[in-house]
Image (tube, rainbow, N blue to C red; front, top):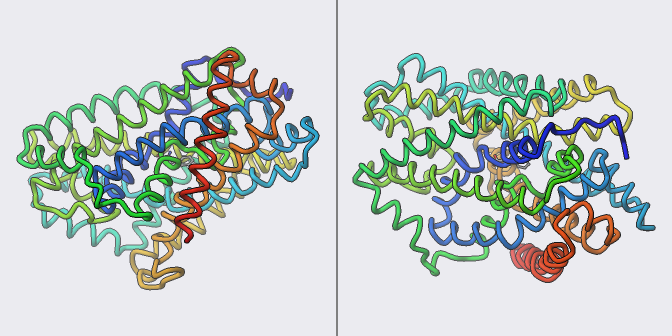
Length: 446
Ligand code: PHE
């Protein structure tokens, strides 16, 4: 065991850290717009199903590898493979995860920058009594301004990397402690407001009455990818956090808590956002701008609207902050594992993510019509393929490693759920999660 490694201060701190990684843009920004593009309730049902059958079991696999290895993801995989008498090439799964988080963080930072812009705009009173058309037009104008977008992207990335540079278990605990409860209070206010709008009934129907005709292979793949994205599973990012997990803590219980918190945040923001969409006669499939256009409209006709809206963007910023710290950690830990100093590793990751992020920034203006693959511009590509294909693929390899390669007694100890819990988990991963992931990945490729 690597004794120099930091540890989370308590069981609660670990749950909060993983929840902080899970709850982010995926729940508040991505879920509503992807559900909007994929028919609503059918997507929601599939996504919840995938969370239970794939997301949770694979999340346990991923964290337990980190916990058993107590090193950076690649080193843990290599070390455990060696113990099992298997090839150390398994470490490439960690490198693949590094590539995935690199791509995701590059656009994540840009979109998180939008909430900085909107926080400042709210404080400046830009949305007081704003008309819906004006809110939509302002958003378009912002997207078409690469300099403002770059400024916010830079600011957000610096915010993230300054915490990463200090070592995650220091600053992160306090941040999570404060943010998560506040986020729930605010979402509750929003949902309460939603119940008073004319679009509420239609939103509930649209979110909770699945229509089978809306399901096609694309929807299934997107739902699976979203389950991985929102839980932060499949990129070895949680493996990096598992390495700091305390010794005596049941993994299934911790992970179950996280999933419940994660799904409820998505549901609450879905209800809040779609009530506005239907009240205002907007298009649910409006795409990535959905949240940024609907919420200012929703708050505009509430008492103290700007105060609530400002708090909302502040919390969104904190939620994306804790997620992006998790996205950056495996890259920094990986470079450290190769002998780099933490400060140099952080600097390299910052500069490369920043540069790649510029392509996402420009995808809304200069490069909007430059199609890289299958008619998608850079942002459309980087915000879908790594989540929908790379995360499930990484998850598949992680799952195979955990149930077929890792020696039984090591996995049993790291899961910390007793022999029966272990047997159940392993059976689910072997006979449900792994075949299901193969099936969806293969059928979507065909
Ligand atoms: N789960 C995060 C979100 O929902 C995104 C994320 C994906 C974080 C993969 C880490 C790893 O915003």
